[in-house]
Amino acid sequence: MTNLNNFVRQTFIPSQRRLTGVELVVANPGRDSAEISMMVMNDEGVGVALISKTVSVTDCGHVLFVFPRRGLRVAPGQVYSISLSGGDNLFGWKYVLGGYDRGLAFFNDKPLLKGAHSTFLFRTYGRS
Image (cartoon, rainbow, N blue to C red; front, side, top):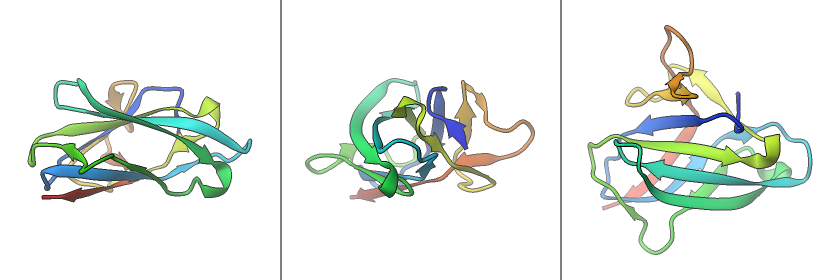
């Protein structure tokens, strides 16, 4: 698990034209709650959406960020990134060896694990 005070991001490739939500697995319960921000960036690293929400430690296993209206317009097949920040040093983002085979996890702009494919735990939701 990585601390959200570092720059952590996960690349992914959408298959739908609209991204309606992103579900993340975070942990490190401590105080009652903290605010987490999730940014979606395009393949050039430019932020295309930012959502913040207060997350309670009693409900931090799976955190769902929902995009307003009809969702965020994305280009299927293109690479995007999800980054997390905030959490007042309370939360971290869980990762696994292997995982999602169409993306990579990065920690401070370097692959999360040297010499091994790893990904943060996440799920995207979309629609045409």
